[in-house]
Length: 110
Image (cartoon, rainbow, N blue to C red; front, side, top):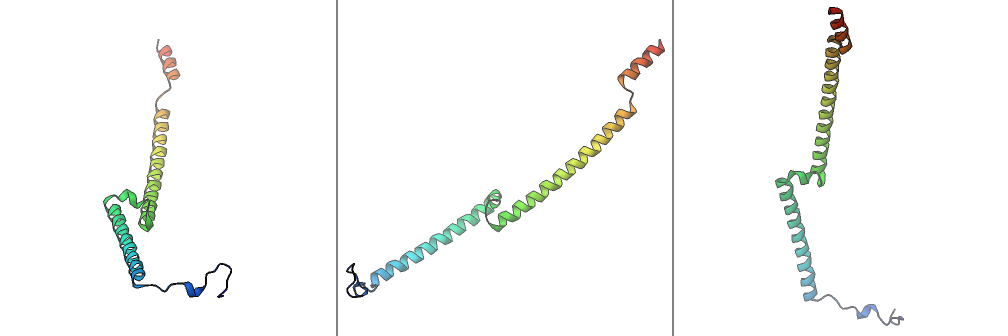
């Protein structure tokens, strides 16, 4: 290992100095702080703008499911309303005489 082709050996590796340890520690704390700030901002955004919750996280999944169920119920209600309205229209049409029958009645009245 001492005579490798690249000329680099493990004995040439410098041990970590206090300065490099401080830099590493600083960056690890800095990245952790940024991560916490990001989580805080996302949480604030979700609480202030509930529509964002539909895009993000489990909370968003729950919101999407709830909205989907509400939309399905709304569609089913609209279908039932449409069916009942169509039945009523058919009933009304069956009750009133058609225009041709009215014309025939008018001719017979003369």
